[in-house]
Amino acid sequence: MGAVRKAWIGVVAGAVVLLAGCASDEPRVVNSSRVPSTLAQPPVATPPDAAITVGPIEATTGMSATRTTAARPSPPPTPATGTIVLRTETVSGVAVPDVPVHLSRQEPCDPAAHDIPVGETSETQRLDAVTDSDGRAVFTVPVGCYYFGMTAPVGTNPVPEGMHSAFLTTAGSTVDGLLRFQDTAGPCHPDGISADLGMLDNAAVVDCDGTWAVIRFATPGDNQRIIRRVDGTWTTYVLFPHETCWATAESDGVPARLRPYFTC
Image (cartoon, rainbow, N blue to C red; front, side, top):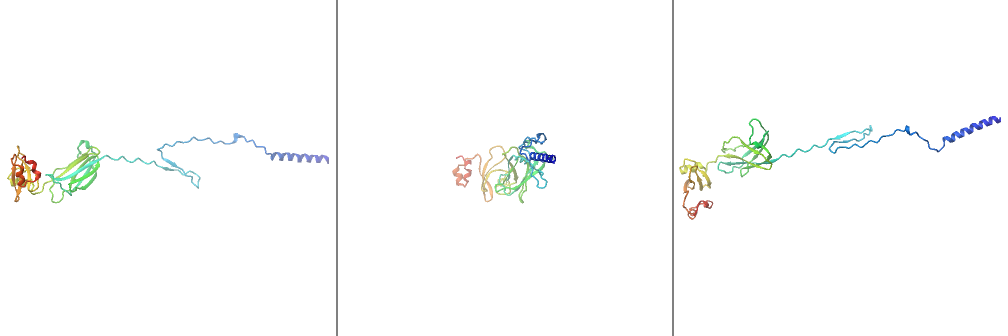
């Protein structure tokens, strides 16, 4: 009996020692070779002009939903511009208002050459306007080659001068274009003046208000004269050179604007 009791005591004592070892507070040693490690990743530099990629996390998959925003394109350069002024007037220089005019840009064309190759260009831009009370229409347009023209109003007689062209070669420059009409019949028309004076050649009218005028002819020598219109007919007042003084001319009704034509 004593031997059996000693055996059971030994078994119980061994079990207690085993349980004490399991409940010990001593830290456990972990083999570091078995723990996976994560290598640090270097930062990625993004060029300043590159597209920006945004990747929000999708709620359903947990994956990044990549969205790319394209870089903004640069705006096109502003073309160099200048000014083209179209003028509508009679042969004698009187402004003709309210005339429809137009510009037609032709390309390809080098304005520095001052030539529009026939059959090699086409219209790339058209601009329309109406001349103002001074017979002018102003266009601000890119540097280039242009045709211009008009639609003659009813009752007018445009001068047949063929195709008109204008060349704007540098930014900020101004180019004039002239569109002409025949003078209408009237007291200052060269045909009527020449007929009244019995002259075969048409007079060049220098100054005329319908009553007094200064004219000359395209012949050698000093053929200038001052004429006046009485009862609807032009007659010669003085023929240059003359000796009439201003006091006499003024008393005869010569307008003050003609004073420079008198030397005494």
